[in-house]
Amino acid sequence: GMSRDEMALALERHATSKLPDDNIDQVMTMGFRGEALPSIASVSRFTVESRVRSGDGPGQEGWKRVVDHGQLVAEGPAAIPPGTRVRVENLFGNIPARRKFLRSPRAEYAAALDAVRRLAMARPDIGFTLEHDGRRTLSVQPGMERPERVAALTAPELAENSVGLDFQREGLRLGGIASLPTYNRGVGDHQYLFVNGRPVKDRLLVGAVRGAYAEMLARDRHAVVALFLEVPPSEVDVNVHPAKTEVRFRDPALVRGMIVSGLRHAIDQAGFRSVQRPAEAALANWQVEPVQTAQGAFFGNNPLPLGSEAAGRRGHDAQPLPVGFADYPSQGEGIGSFRDSRAHFSALPMGRAEAATESVPQASRFPLGIARGQVANTYIVAEAEDGLVIVDQHAAHERLVLERMRTATANGRVATQGLLVPEVVELDEPACDRLEARAAEFADLGLEIERFGPAAMLVRSVPALLGTKDVQALVRDLADDLAAYDQAISLKERLDHVAATMACHGSVRAGRVLSVTEMNALLREMEVTPHSGQCNHGRPTWVKLALGDVEKLFGRK
Image (cartoon, rainbow, N blue to C red; front, side, top):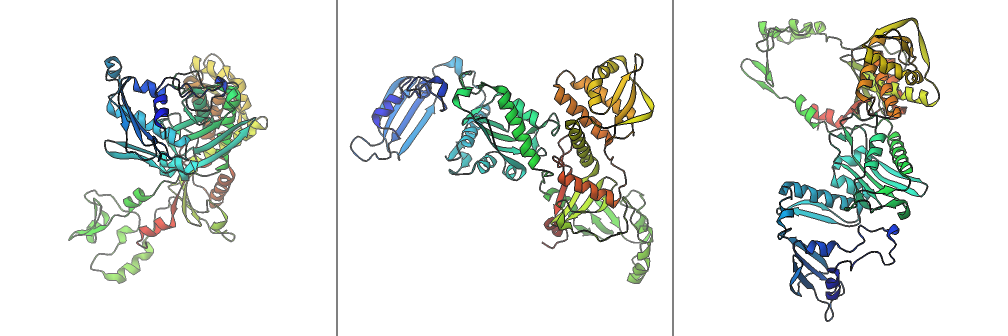
């Protein structure tokens, strides 16, 4: 709190300046000129009440001062607990030109909420409460850990779907939390950046976050991060923007590189982790209670009459049931007929089952479990120690191929596979020009192409990782990618995008039957490959249905 004399001084301009020695390069506070309180008091009806904590003696009681648009209109004793309370009313009441440019009440509240949220993240040792129209909209307790505080202010599930950062380099320190690539949003409003405890909205830092998540998120998706950068005051200038929301670094390349490498290192440590969203909605769709009627059993809106000729029909549509259901006994044939007809029941095979040639390994030995089968020739079903794991085989293999190509590129040159007969791909002339200009970059990735006339490209070799499945489609897609992104992104980003396109063409396609050995090999490689929890577009490659959810389906819980 403040005493009576301190309160009067606080409302004088520059009286609370944080620069006792005029060293403007060593600012560590939110502000430093001492103008906030008198500036607000000059454009509103401003009431401040305060009492010092040891204010029991004479002259130490609570005190209040009221300033109406710069003029002191009242002061006197106030009944208040130790501390300070500030109330601002009738903002810009005497300045209609400024008042009419205020946004709608909803927009102004959203801006206030965002400001308080950022302050609460910066100081987890302090409690914050925000009320709006008599309703408490934000409340966090003091003394929280930083990841816990960030999750409380954004989304509770962020704590389980994020990784922590603690990275140091050349006197700089980066902390905070970052979401898994599969936990993302359609807008970038949940990216919180702090420099020495000061909330900022700096383009350099935003660009560094985007670069760190490159090729792990779709271009219209954004990560959820709260990054806290500690920099020596002499290495950052906080005076480049009136609101101090932008900063300038003495060595911006060092800061950007630190953020990108720190985020990527933390995401790499996540391994094959992926967001596992609650399965209640899916379970609700499965748990449809049958309703018995005089005509038969109804599941949801699809009636399935029992017995006689209706056994082969579903509702009013004459759709044949799977093989074997035509032999279902009528209601009058009894249970004996059902036992005799059991041998005719068969499910239409969607994958392939194999006889085990060796002992089946224990699921507890592997995080992603042991493959048990394939559904719709697209999804691998594996049994883990604590549930069922379902893997999208195309999305998972696409990520694995991309990571292999990146590793090969980092170690030198990607191995190539020459075509016995070079393939000619016909394109329009501008597309051929774009491909020809980037031929050297493609060669680094194992794709060797050359111009073959004005409107065609000749492909001599492809990356060995991809094989020679559909060279025509690969080259056409690369030409389209260059047309869309060639001018807007850097060389490194362009190479990553090209590699992602190649990986998509070289991965296991949906609809391909895999053997159990191939399924398990895919699962084992996912467990040791960074970023395998999401595909190249930021979608999850696997989900888990916990045993508890399975038990709910059968009424065991």
